[in-house]
Image (cartoon, rainbow, N blue to C red; front, side, top):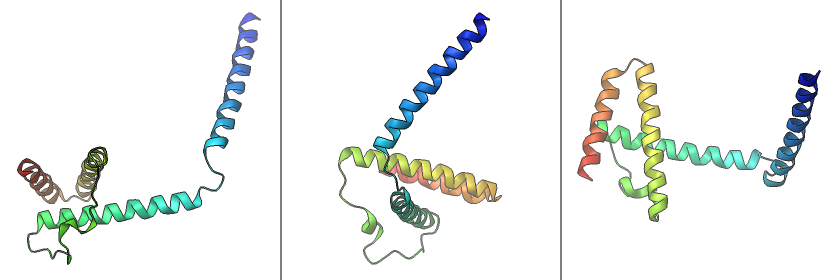
Length: 123
């Protein structure tokens, strides 16, 4: 009987904590997430396209650059933003390498990985 009573007490405590979390979430998160996620998607797609262009250029020196060169999409960033972008680029590279390997493009993935390592050492 004591086990059931303590289980009920724990269940009640959990339910109470869940209600508190839900209340906090409703205060912090806006009701309509569609505009936020549309903007998020736009930013991610822009970032992805920019990084894929850089990867294609790294693999193919004959790949045409845009009118302003590779820096056209880059803004002046402070140190913290630069660190976050570097981290995002590294993560995106890992994702791209994973997809290339899943597509059985091992050679291309290896070439991209090694060219990125060479570029990194030159910076």
